Image 1 (cartoon, rainbow, N blue to C red):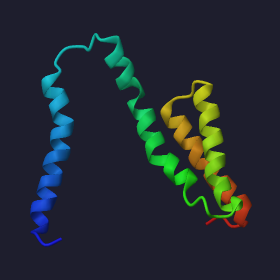
Image 2 (cartoon, rainbow, N blue to C red; image 1 turned 30 degrees about the vertical axis):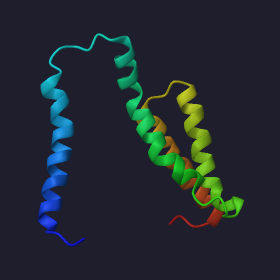
Image 3 (cartoon, one colour; image 1 turned 135 degrees about the horizontal axis):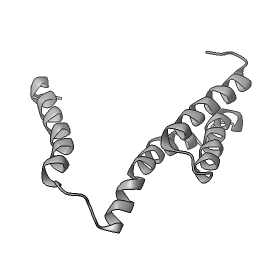
Length: 110
């Protein structure tokens, strides 16, 4: 990185701001397209899955015991989502599943 760090920070802030403000300024009425509404409904779930699924699989060369907390979270998340739970309860239950599985695997809380 050979440039001015403040320029990079400003550009990052401007892009982040633009991504959040443009939809609010360009879309002033309710979205009536069924396809677009359905797409926007599932965006938070897909974002959570895209962020967590690679971490669940992690290092596939690791022993199975190291993969168990991630696999436990995957199983809990899929089961709760299948049952119709919302995004926050699914995420919280997955975190609790990882915590519990890691505690059972190592025998220590932290």
